[in-house]
Amino acid sequence: MLYVKVDKNGVPCEYPIAEKELRYRLPNVFLPKELTPEVLASIGFVQVPEQPAPERVSLHATVPDIPIIGDNGEIVRTYEFVPYTEEGLEHRRNELRAKRDKLLKECDWTQSEDVQAGMTAVERQQWSDYRAALRNMTDDFEDPNIVTWPVKPAALKLPKIDTRSDAEAVKRRLAAKRIDVQGAGMTYTFPDGTTGTVQTRNAIDVINITGQAVGAMALSMQGDTTTLLPFRDAQDITHELTPLQMVQMAMAALNFVSATYLKKWELENKLDELTANEASGEELVSVVESWTP
Image 1 (tube, rainbow, N blue to C red):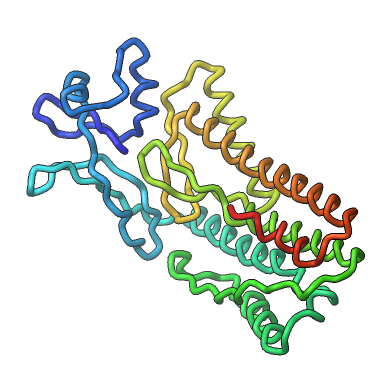
Image 2 (cartoon, helix red, strand yellow):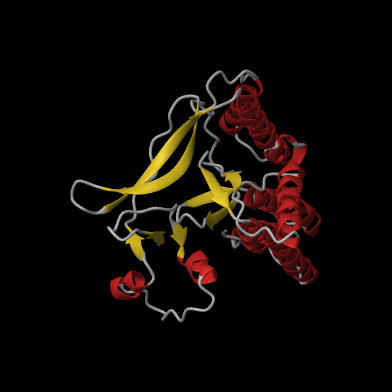
């Protein structure tokens, strides 16, 4: 839920913020658990109704703006469509190239001999076509807001496993599963109230997030707690975060990545235990399939 500061006439005068940020801004004001309209009015705020994000505009970044009063008297969220600079356009293209490379890397495991042997001819062709389509995508990405990605084939099912030696194949599938979970990114509710995806595709993303956190902490150490730092999510929505908010988001993302490794190690231990007890192949596969993000 979002809240916005209003003037004496009830007109929004600031960017909307989430409840957590609202409470952080008023440390000396007691706010009850439920923020009723009366409570909000006492501190000069109103609730901002939920609204879907707008459609993207060609060659423009989408940035949340100050809400307005609609024709029916309700608060309406607004967005600013900022033209990409040449630098911003190239940065966005680099992100798309990285996504393409990541999608290819994520399915490299489908090309191993043991996995190929368990595929049908149709499955082998589907994965071959998918990978070829990714490799053939242009590097130019003339309009980074209009990109058609090839459709990933349906998830493969492991062939029946009857020997303990094949437990290593299941572990490789588990490793691929961890990469898929991390690659999907972290769903996060930003201070502006919108929910987006923080990209955690690879080491480059993690380094980028860490760097933003370090920069935000440096500002905080200098006493700067109000500078708004831009962060663009996987949906190409740019969010403005204070140094503290940037650090909080970065820590959540890093914890998300760490959690994928912890889950993988936990399931590996289960696989080792099952293998030692002569478990069936179906039991081993079920361990991997039990991991639902």
